Every structure is written in C-alpha cells, then in structure tokens.
Length: 577
Image (tube, rainbow, N blue to C red):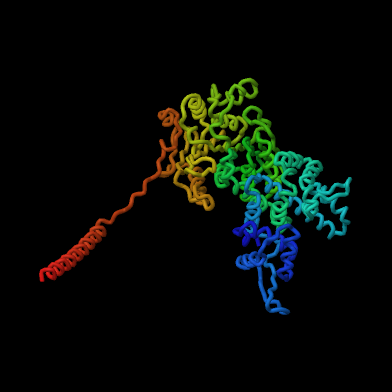
C-alpha cells in the first residue's frame, strides 16, 4: 500500500488511512465514507472528489450498486493490513511517515516510533510463542520480559506495548508516559526518558497534533516487525538518519554516508574476536558496519566487543537504539568529550569521522597528566592549534589502538603548516601512517570539500615499513540517486580503492607507494596530488579516418556552393528579362 501512497498528497493520505481503519476491505457507499471521515473530524465538501483521486491512484475499486444502478459501491484496495514487507516496501512506508513530520517536528520522533514499534512486535512474538507452548498470557508476558525487554509491568499488571498504547485516541495521549515507564522498567533502555524529555514528546502528543500522530501510527501499524530481520529493521532506522541528513547538515548535525563507512571498515579488514572503538560515535554506524563486515566474512557468531563515546547525549541515545535494532548486544556507549575525558579502554581497531577543523580550548588537554600523555606519546609537542583538532584526534586514536586506525578528515590536515605540520612530521617519522586516500568532492552532506581517509598501522608488515601508499580516488564516484548536488562511492569504487590498498603497488594515475625519504624531501606534505595525479584520458585519433571525413565534408560544401550559385544565376536571369 505505502509504495502507492508515497507520492500522494497528504490530505488524501490522511483520509485514506482513516477509511482503511474504519471500513477495512468491506464494500461501502458514499454516505458511509462521509460518516467515517466525520468521526475523525476530516470532513470535506466533496467526498466524491476524494474517492475519484483514490481510484486514479489505484487505491479504490468502484462498481455499480446492483440494487440501484444510479449509485456506486466502493472498496479500498491495498488496505492497512500487516505484511512482511521487503526492504523497499519498508522504506516506502517510512517515506509516507516522514511526510507527516516535516515542518518543524524533529525527525528523531520517527526514530523513537520505529524503535518502540519494532521492540513491541519482537516482544509480542515471544509472547505468542510461549502461549502456543501452553503458558498462560501472564506467564508468557513474564517469560518475554526475562528473555527480551520488560514491556509488562508485573506490579501494575499493565502492558506497555505499542499496540496497547496506540489502540485509541485516549491511550495515544499516554504514549510519552509509556516510553518513560519502559525506560524505568529496563536498565538498558533508561535513556528513553531522556529522549522523551528532550524531544518534547509530551508537548507534541496532544489534541492539536493527534491527526498527524494517528497518521504516523497507522503507517507503523501496517508493518509487523516481528517478521522482519533485525538487519532490515536496522537499515530502515539508518534510512531515516540518511533521509534527513541533508536537512540536518544545514543545522550542524553531521552524518557519515554509509558507503564511506563501508570503505573504512573494508580497509581495516576487521577480524572476529577483537575490540572496535569509535570515539566520535555519532549514530553508531561505524560500529554496526564493523559488526556486519565480520558477520559477512564467514557464517559464524560474531565475537566483537564494541565501544563508543559521543559528547552529544541525544546522539548517544540514538546510537544505542540503532545498535539494539541491529540486535547487537556486546557494546558499551559512553557520554562525554573523548579528547579531554576518554572513558573507553584500549581497542584493537579504532575508527571515526570526528568533527573536521574543530575549534577547541587546547589548554584543557594540558592540565591532567594522564590526558597530556596522550598528546605527547607520538609527537614531542602534540597539542595542535585551537582552530583545528584534526591531529589531536589522530593521536587520541593511535594511543588507544593496538592494531589499526581508520579516520576521515578534511584534506587540509595533510598539508597545513605550523603546529599541525610538526605533529604530522613526528608521526610520519615514527612510520605509523600506512595509507592516505583522497576522496571525491561532494560526498558529504555538510560540505562539498573532498575528505581524506588515513589508515595508521602500529604493526606494519616488513614489506610496508618505511613507505606510505597514496591513493587518488578523486574520480571514483557516481551521481547520488537521491540528492542531486551530491556524489557517492559505488561498490566498484570501494573495491578498487580497497584492492589498491591491499596490493600496495604503484598504479598509474591512481596509486603510488612512496618512501619516507621522498616524503621528507616534500617537507612532510602528505597532499595526495603531490604523489599521484589522475591519468588524463587522451582520445585516440585515427588520422586516415579523420582525413576521409574532412574530404567528405569538403565535397558536400562544394556541392552546396555550386547549387547556390546556379540558383542565384537563375534569379538574376529572370530579373534581366
């Protein structure tokens, strides 16, 4: 249904949802439709016009009334029934829901609703399983509580599932309170209360917005998440983040495109049984992609320990919900400033897309001896200028990494002078940088500037020691399918970049393996274009063919001139008579 509704005007959508809710798939007459709309305060002057629009969109069937051929009988098509949707149909449903929250409502409301509905459906699936096994409802509730999350309050003997809370207008008003209650019943979901408060859900869920909320609820009610795999639900969650990323980028909220995350994880070749850390966590996408990469390498149980830290408390909660919806369990998320107060342990792989050129009070890093050590271990004076913390992030990640670091930064970090240059020089001399990759322009939502990926390796193989591979991937892109002004990395581009990194060989116009001595000669400038420049495609010219074509054009021109002269002579002759 929702794929058909995706491009329908909102006033039609709202009324279609109400008709589907009230009339389901039963045949109905015009007056019954009017009555259903009136019940929900959605009356319009011309209901026939609405029904006509629904018929045009393939959402309504119209037949003559057998009892009165002057009248029509209507029946809704693709009604609001629970289905096990494909990934595409799920995304189309979310597009329909996203249309309702535009115009001032925080997109995170949609994330919370998706999380709550999916959690409830998975919980109810457990309940149904136990009931089939012969347990009573109450026993099944308690077993589901112990096995999954607690959505049944044993003390109050009250259900807090999505279906229970959204079953009527009276209970919808309690949606925010239900989420708060769930946060108190589940230690791992304790952050829900915070996001309810920060998003102002209590203020949003009121009589004035009830039509909008009911429309969103009806979209989610059409989906049975118990039948949807966790990775698909998780992808739907990340689709919402991605869908609103261009809009949120203008407000300073950044989101790393999925294909760039995939590139970094593939470059590091993360192995099972190790620890992965993201100190600039954001929505948690890098940790999830690391887990997925390991899972897809072999069909075995993933044994990764995941750590993340994020100083924006709400984004940290968003990340936790993201991890839960992907069914990841072995993780720990910290809240705070990673540069001045890293709360995580050391890890094998450290990955991040930290804020580029971050303005920061560097003096804060010098006060605590333990923190100062982080920024003096790899550089004699590793405190960068206050207007850019790019190399502070590199040092932090190196300090906590046992194996490899993968970081996305602004291109300027490769060649800026001053204090940054001194830190860069020290780290190059210590032979910690393995690869520098220049990305194409216009990959990121918040800037058109090209980013760079730097891979650092504390355990370089013997054949790579004293060398850095520079990869110029500035031409490796395709047009973004949804955002006209953007580019993106395609699968073939990721494979090409990763392949070049693993081969660690010169590729004309694309990759160059450079010795540290040569980099010293360039005064420790790591600008990729100094070492490898894209090969300019020269068009091959067939001189014989070109000459033949030229002679043919010349012949035709002579014919035209001859014909024109004859015509002019005829006109002159006629005038002379």
